[in-house]
Length: 215
Image (tube, rainbow, N blue to C red; front, side):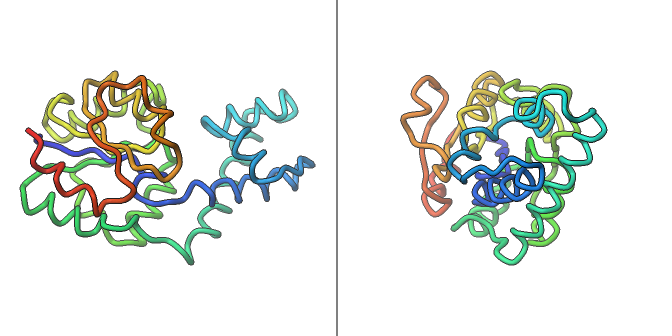
């Protein structure tokens, strides 16, 4: 293993419930009053797809863009007081650095949300390459982002282990030819049975140290 690539949301920070809360608040202002379980069921994919699915052609493309930015700002406002890395990740990042493993991020989040985490937690220096939703034409499960991160790291995707939390991300890693470790913050193990590239499930990064030994 020469490289490690991290997804961000749900993998480095346990934030999916915060996203759901932000969506719930925004949707209520738009006349759609959903419970959090309903939000979790309805809200998946990129923001533009979500607005189209929930509201059809009610909003123009520009209005959807503005509303999406409003939702992300709401998310950051809610999350900032509780912002922290998943348990064990600070130590794991130091271990990777000590073993000269090159590290990158391939996130489906917008740039503002990626910067929000990296800069507020002062961890940007650990990552040689950081890519976000705006850096790719095709989102996960397409493997484009993982190919691009590996290229930025100067390694082959087959030489990388990807840390993910979702089946969509696991599929992207699989299609990229990378092994994957799943952080079970958001989804159960049973949701990943079709992916042969998964080498381990972890609750948090205190269980991840042995991954460094993978060749």
